Image 1 (cartoon, rainbow, N blue to C red):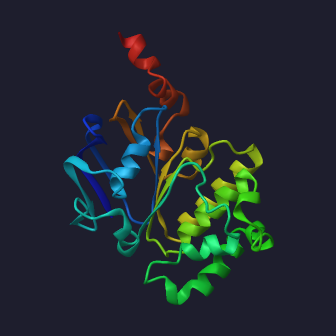
Image 2 (cartoon, rainbow, N blue to C red):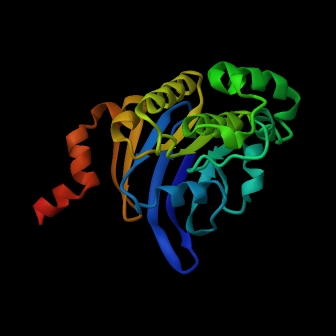
Length: 239
């Protein structure tokens, strides 16, 4: 569904991603793990049009996204749920969700999609009239993901959804991701919780220093070996 081909991207004169190749299959959950500074968030920003491409290409269903601005991505069926639980704090929970249905193709079914989001996240239904700024961290993350789902995306890019959340909420979040995968959503998940990511993923990429060090089916990944690469222990021992 999505192909990243020899991608170079970064910030101004600083290159973060170096000739990165990745492939994301339709209907699968692909996890991208790696330490801070590996280029994971930069990758999602480049895919979603928030960063210009310095080299290479990004193909969605065979069509290049190279010159597609970020605001056109929902119309192409792609949504980014960014790191940091970015919500409109002074707006109600429900108004935040309805903002997610701004894309023209999603507007006619906004009411139906709202009911589906509330079924997925019952706590949001209970707080629908509250200001989003009054939510807990876990509830705000649910809201950010629910708002993304309101656009009816075929492809979800999700950046660090478990970051800073209590363990019980992290388990709830991964259960929701598993449910979305069963529903046929294509998901690209950036996550530092490697155990949780492996449990829901079909395929795993490990990134470090702007490059891909590992590409493997999740069922075949050994967590200890992954952590060796993650922390570069294997490279240090080899040297």
